[in-house]
Image (cartoon, rainbow, N blue to C red; front, side, top):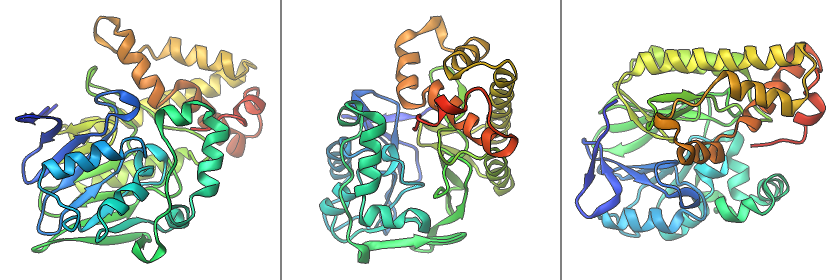
Length: 328
């Protein structure tokens, strides 16, 4: 699906043409799991920082691409989950002239991340220090908050057009490059697994909303993008097919969780049933690849998020109590 070439000597960096570069943030030591993207325009822009632990990798990659401390114009995050925005404070410190752009519902958490970080430590426990690290605060005067729509200046008439894209998270935006037609999806269209040419949902609690997620995907279809750039992971050129598949897979998972609840299954048994009915499409049953993607987007978290949405829309079910304690 339009896989791409590595820059010579830059194993973490992939040129996608039109001065767009994919940066493998090496989240948790895994390759090909979380991407940031540099738009090396007149006013350079980084889309997604990755985690705090990934920040040194991202900073070094930007420097290899010729972006010095005073050169980066903007840092944009699609939403404030720590695999996308955990490195904002570190990147802002390394590039002191860069503005930080985020949806208005997430802006205060970048200024004062204490509640977000404390919650993440409670949810993830020791894994927090292995995968994410702590989000550092960013000065309020450096943050630009987006509303329903917005525009980010990339220089020379080029821009990123932002639009509200909830469903995965209440603070999620999509981003369209006016020059290339590239659409930065964040997690709004789920997770793309290049090893398998497959998609899986991204439906963690507490914000997942099926109706909003489907509406955001429909908006992405209507944009007629040239290419999708997934934060997890990489570029896809078969835009309509992948968006259609993402919607179909999402609906399938929701129906499976609904079926599990109708059978009075608890969360563990619901997760087991979903795994059995949605076999990972990894070539040769690649257990390492399966583990990698479970670390990023676990079946348990996805089922818990769907269950929570069903609790809200259809009333409490057999998975309710167990799902209440699960987060992303």
